[in-house]
Length: 89
Length: 451
Image (tube, rainbow over the protein chains, first blue to last red):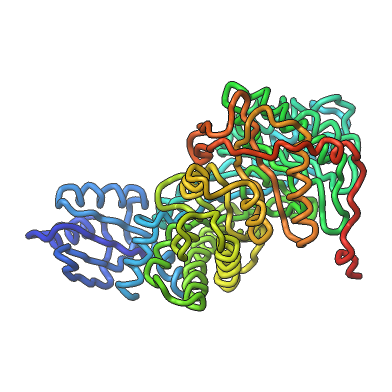
């Protein structure tokens, strides 16, 4: 299963490090990353491969949300198909 | 994948309240028919709880994985008048209670199908079912009832129209403690559709498969936001913008429907291309019309604005999904739409204008509160008017009206949740009693003879 991770929040030291460490612990592979600062907000998107992850989707979601709280950013994970299907046939 | 598109999808869900309004599982009860009422009810309960056992859990899983809210999980069943008619029971309250118990067991919000199709005439079961409606709705929590009183092919059954005025009044009286909430679960249709996923009018038609998944989408907030970006532009641009937005909204319905169908092992029926408002801020169809340039919904131009909206939603949605069905059009319920409530309170929207609006969109006079002392004949006459609009224009129309006991024009009744609150609206004081007393049938229109 592939998923899109989005991280939005106030920029500070260690967001990418924190998020990618957490993903590594969950055995989630990062396929692609795009990051920018939009009107002062740190905005990052990652394409993830969850095929080797051991935890189920809800557990992954919770672990990431908890990480988000610690880093003071909002982390969301959604299956890739929602984005694909909304914008293309 | 484009960053912009990802952010757009997230914004649509988080800020503009894009959601899947309902996943509705249609279940045929035709194989539950038996002469013994107890046996039928046991079969109904077993079949519903077996087929829908995982419906709610599956909906929640999809919601979590895709990050799109699925507001309601519901069930529709074969019209109960067809099932219960085989028994010799004198009322069908016990059937309603069985449906209620099954709905509670599987955890769905509503179960629709306490219904009768009497557009041309009533059989024994229809008559008993209609008479059972007030108590059935008062004594159950999640059961929804509907009665189809007319169709383009067969005209309008004015005996049923007459009876439904009385039934609506009785339902309101029996649920007076909740200001007539029972009536919010009762729809009177013309040209009812067999695959509607929306409540309270959903039932599983006899032409449907044994079990099917239908999906209803929502997203007035998304359309409103898209139109904010084309302020002052000509209507060609407005129509194009609505179409593109409707496409995206409908794609979500298609995705969720396909996924639910796969996980439940149940065929995917249709996506209902509807714009369904909720009382929440930013989720109003009325505000879309106002965004087109109307100071308050209900003023001159409202019908044209709604016609454009309704048509563009369909055009955008049709390409986005495999099978379109259900009611498919913009909904204009009063109590469930913050913009409509404001317009009534402001004095810009009245029943006459609402009636005109129902001629060009789905579905009808929906979630409208009127004073409790309005006579049954007047309610029947309102039903007749709506049925006439549906029958002549070859479209579905409906009446879901609440004669709230003890209220007068200007009061507000509170339903809570998705049903919202409704300002009590004025109706004509001139009598329609002699008109309704005639009974009989209004013949099918000439253009129904197409063969």
